[in-house]
Image (cartoon, rainbow, N blue to C red):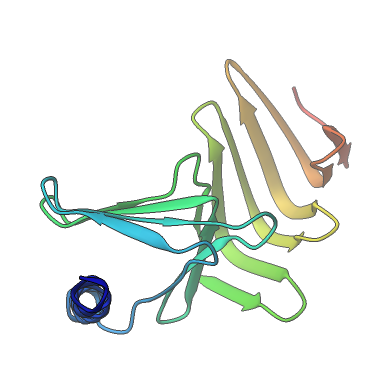
Length: 166
């Protein structure tokens, strides 16, 4: 019985890896706490382990989160409360936990918060973002504009520089 169980787990792992690679080309998923596959709903879920987040890497992009779901029926991948970042150039230094996005940058932080700028530097370990160049932040029903914003995310502190418009 135990041999059949481990054989099934090995086969399932192989199928998961092959299906992920086939569906997305060079997609790599790192799940520190592992994951599971719901056969009935055809949904794969991957989990973080403490501060070690789930990583989904595809070509030059990196997305991290506490959980990743991959729906094989709808072909949708989602990270709950995921931040969406759009830019013409994106550089991620995984070893330094640093991200730089430039040229028409838009960051959707959550459903009610967004930021636009020309250059975004994010130091993940310090939980600090610096936005420069025609900066605009929207939160619920207000918008603030400036030349630069320093965002201390863990403190909820945002410092706006330049001619400020609110």
